[in-house]
Length: 123
Image (cartoon, rainbow, N blue to C red; front, top):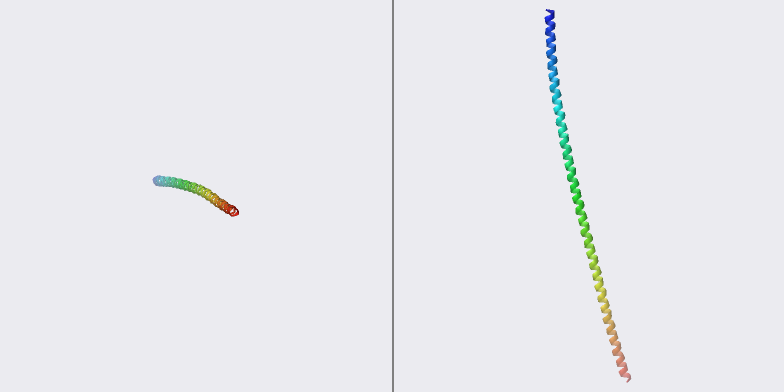
């Protein structure tokens, strides 16, 4: 009878250990799935971060290009304004020279007429 009871205890212990192994195996598989899911989510998050960084870099490049274009436009406008100022100065100087010639011509004519009148008065 002792052997039967010991055999039953041994069989019961074996069943408990097999059941325990199954639980451990199931829990290990669950943990492996959890780790796999976490790794997948981390990979997705990293991919999203890379995409966001690419988008931000592209936006920065676009903004820099726009800034360069604005600077180019402003420089072109400044060059045009300077050219217009030079042309205006040239025209003003030309007008001043013409005015001075006219005044000198009028003065010369007035001196000649005055000299004629003096000459006529002396005769």
